Figure (cartoon, rainbow, N blue to C red):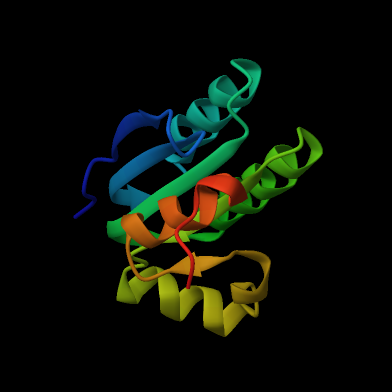
Length: 125
């Protein structure tokens, strides 16, 4: 039984990036929604994207292609794509396919936002 994909978009101006919260299955039928969201953000000059992946319940090869394409497109636009709170399902898929090296992964969204913050606004270690 497929779980319908839902996407939430939250702009974090202080960190200069956007968080996309993804829930459900990323598959052949739904991956276009995620791809269109990433493309729209890039066209709005928001190429620094964090995907909150905690609620992803399934991801197939088309979903992986969308994530890879998003990483390439954000990089070409001078930004990046990070993954936060990667679900066990997605984490295992990234490991099995050898794609985990393509994405910076953070334990949670707060860590991603810390990484995204301009260097002069970061707290000292």
